[in-house]
Image (cartoon, rainbow over all chains, first blue to last red; front, side, top):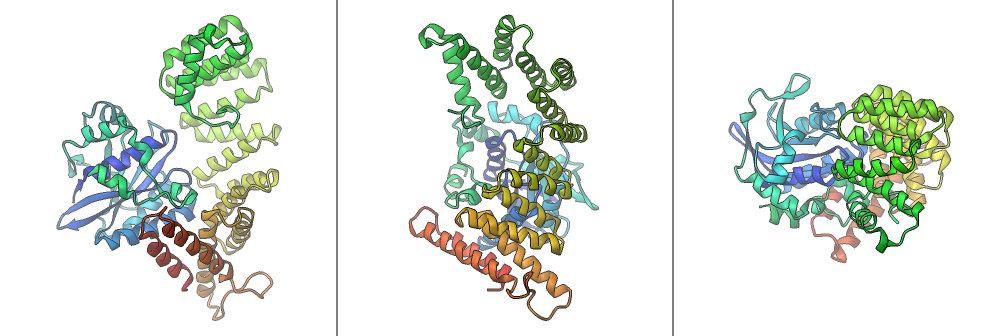
Length: 200
Length: 286
């Protein structure tokens, strides 16, 4: 299975991580399947506070699924950024949410993906706009999620890091709203409609 | 002001403190205030990845206060920022040998262990700290979070109960206890979660959105459990009078009003109401 990650999805999920540098963040990936390619076209930021308890993730899953469906798309994956730089595992809770997306989302059996933000590549990507994409691809293997043996299965656009660096410099991380922000104040829109136009 | 409200805003603190510390004559500070600002500058500098400024500031403070535990704590934090966590833990250990009831050193030690991924040790250290300083509500909150991260929800519930007991009129403490109980998911836990969610809604004048959703989610779960048990009747609340979904329905009504108001005044872009309605319908068969 191959995966393409749009600039919009990539920038949004990294900006989400940048907005909360001291915490873990997570969200879902929206897209569609086209033969043996899963096109990830958007990211929906979920949480930056309560990843370890169930209810808020359930709200986010249900509503983001409906939103994706209304646009003719589906939830095709999950993304996560760990709290600690050197932590490159999918925690139990992250895996649970990813499993839920995999079971109930729109990617046919076994083809949902998970992206883990790669902290070691973040500095170069966000400050200089160069270097490799700051995400690692994970796929479902048995009961768990493992790093895909061929990271080349994930295609990220060539100019994505340059775009990301420009946005990070302009402080656009502040403009990303997730479900946690929305649940604090319902006028904070997790669909990020205005930001989407900037990212495209 | 940031200090008063115990916020963490490194960028403005770093800029402001740098200005003040580098222009002492213009700032016309008392010596006491100057050292407090230098301490704030050192910590903020670490948050913005300027370890050199932190170390230079520590050097100045160490000259003035050579045997201060506060300065040694800053040294520990600088070591943590450099990734030398074992050295940092050793520094805090030395401070605690000299000042065995230095609460901040104890908590810094917990933080250092947690940031090194030594979660089990961090939890043990924090639990030990709370054995002595059991009135530290923020520490109970932190321990609850750490237990939750490890999936030890029962222990987390105990911690949240301490938090609620200490600050019973704060709605989001009740709500976070409810979230933990909901995650545990047994029928007894769900009924308890329902009570705490209801308390949160009551205390927050129905403005705690997570608690409103929580009531709908909990009632949905309880109804499903009732159906699984094979009860043909609608599951009822403790005293056998009120159908379980009543609170959920009420909460759903409040949510609908909130979202509709948001769209009406133009603060929310259209489309969200429909998505929320969809979820509430699914949850409550409304």
